[in-house]
Image (cartoon, rainbow, N blue to C red; front, side, top):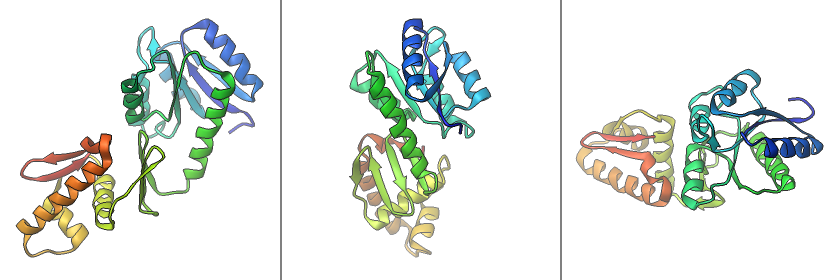
Amino acid sequence: MSANIRALFIEDDVDIINLTKRMLEGEGIDVDVAMSVKFGIDKIKSSKPDIVLLDLMLPDGDGKEVVKWMKQNKSYSGIPIIVITAKSSEVDKVLLLELGADDYLTKPFSIKELAARIRAVLRRYSTETSRDFFVLGDLKIYFDEMRVFIGDEEVQLTKREFQILEYLVRNKGMVLKREKILTAIWGLVDDIDENSRTLDVHINNIKKKLGKYKDVIKTIRGVGYRFG
């Protein structure tokens, strides 16, 4: 990274672009600009910025598509995203965080506040690079510490619940049979049917504790479970 933070601002309002660019550069944050979803993605590929500042209402599509694209591509999924938009409803905010945005600022906004949020998000990323963790929106799972957070609130899981959740997350996208989960967590088990019922109880407890993220654990009827 250069001495200055390199931000990519994806926005199509020229007045907002000019003011934000000038003010942020006075704060030691270099600002590159793209005015559409297409050119935003092109710039991310070509320059790989330190952080993306993203408007939602763009001439060729919805800024959410940029968030989705970044989080689905390993080369860019580690770049933090701050959404800047006129939309302010709780539903929009929750959806963006679940998609993978790191912060959310509603127009009109203070440039000083934006600069502070940029630095806060980048500090958080820099301190987490050496930790073994998983992030989905504002859900964070720290494997080494066996701790789970949604936003600033810690989710209180039992040791067994955490082990099950970790196993599901580390095998994200895979359909895991109940027998496979039982063997991985409990070791070899004799009574599969009885222990499967115990597993189902644990899974239901985990889902309840995950609240708005409960649906990331999918029940595959008659088979087992899948995370994601």
